Image 1 (tube, rainbow, N blue to C red):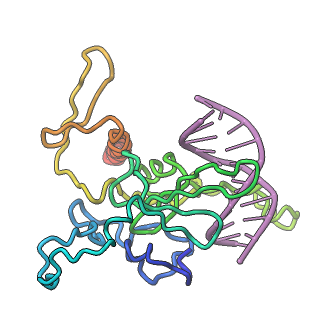
Image 2 (cartoon, rainbow, N blue to C red):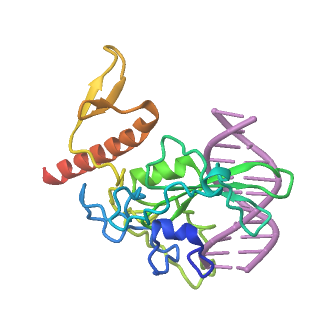
Amino acid sequence: MNKAPMTEAAAVSSTPPETFTGADCLPPDPLLQSGTYIDAETTTPNKGNVSDLPPATVETTTEASVTDETVTPLRKNNRSVEVNVERPSWLPESWKLETKVRASGATAGTVDRYYYEPVSGCKFRSKNEVLYFLETGGKRKKGTPGSDATPSETTPNSKKQKKSGSKAKKITSFYFDSANPPQSVCWVQTDSSADTWAPSCNGSMIPGSRKQEWDAVFSSVSQLRRRNAQIFS
DNA sequence: CTTTTCGGCTG
DNA sequence: CAGCCGAAAAG
């Protein structure tokens, strides 16, 4: 992915020249605190730029800004890759969305969505994967492929390692919405007899869709708390 | 091996 | 019908 033919798309997230060989999808610093997020700036809308444009450019505006709208930066492949599509509301602002249209096969014409995490540049194929990542800073990984490795008798490994399953990297990274770190959350019960709780941040209610992330983080934190409590006792 | 693309299941 | 995810195909 981050190989040679990187296009301007990469410029947005300013992917570092490092090689993310799929080995690490971790942010450079998992210990980053809320608010200390090292972001590649959130699409600075060049407001009062110091380097203003020449004053002569009053309304010499050519047909440049008129025709282009809705953009459609196609790629070389017959598979179109549109970038500026409407973003799902559950997706954190800083993530990159990519929409691909299948070019061939029985399912041609189908639109697939892909999501890119801005810091690590990891790719996700579904909302579930993204949420999973938001919860447990790790990607879903394939379990032991066949659990084979050395079926030969020469490896009588009857040892069972620690119960820690070695699944994915269990790094307890806490990602969440890096672009919007709240300082306090107030959970309010919206229904008296039901388990309907909604997060409220600084007085503003979180929309239902976005709530998923909050729920994810909440459960994650809860588990950590519980874990720590056990250790403490 | 990794990454990309499609098939086909499921809700 | 849309979303997901496994897995084949491609590099």
